[in-house]
Length: 345
Ligand code: UD1
Image (cartoon, rainbow, N blue to C red; front, side, top):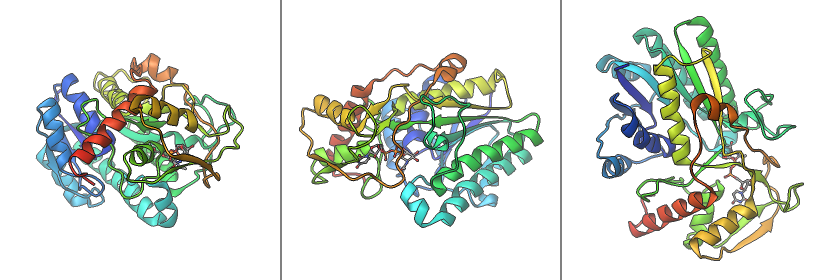
């Protein structure tokens, strides 16, 4: 199927890795919409260095319906991959309206455009956060969705619900929600990666920033959980593997291979890794001793979660290629490159 693919948040962490993956595997033209709220246009230059692809970007805020419509007027869009969203859990607790307004209004506006411009294919960035602390792990797509712990998490739950309702009302529309576990690492070139805004909340950027000397030490949030070493268990997944799942999901949509109008897939490796194991893996690949200490639990953290990704394995043919050491080595390479360039942040 021809037509352009609209990627929202193309300069972002997962968006940029997905553009790289797509350029090798789709003939469709890619278009990005990114207002650089939490990203930089330099990322597109780096993407060009890696895959020699110059993407057209619209610097538009998706909560502006008229400007969003203009993108659809100017381009024939056959599918949307919607990454653009605010994603800081703590900030969402302090400023919930910012999150509800931005994350939901942008989705609603895109769906208005789908209706008006007859776009039938949609991929949505969802999150394992919708499962909360599951009773049974690993979690499958049919595990219960628990009340959200944060407004950010709630926007992901509501986003999936909006898409399901929109599917019911529009029989020719298909949507795939990809539920990411903990995306980490960077492109193996070291040219693109995560750009945390200020002090990172997430584990891996905190590890690499500590190792490079930007932070004095890292605190392991809790050493008394009921896990094999007392620290929390997560399912870390390489960002390039996450990116590739979007290419596979897009092909599934464009080839009309979906089995239901709305489908959801878990994206994790299926391996639960503790915080201390993640730190050890980092120390091994970087050769650096990390200054860490065990501290109190972080409010809102769950003890353990990891994915049963057999549905994505079977239905999408998605098999993650990168192990924990690849994740840490690439994250470290990216941090070193950032330092070399005086930091893009
Ligand atoms: C967080 C979000 C989740 C979001 C995901 C995106 C929360 C409660 N959840 O997941 O909604 O989808 O990011 O990537 O914020 N840790 C430390 N020390 C640190 C930082 C983290 O020990 O300095 C631990 C945490 O306690 C946790 C693990 O590392 O056990 C991973 O933390 P993080 O990277 O923040 O991800 P999540 O909390 O799993």
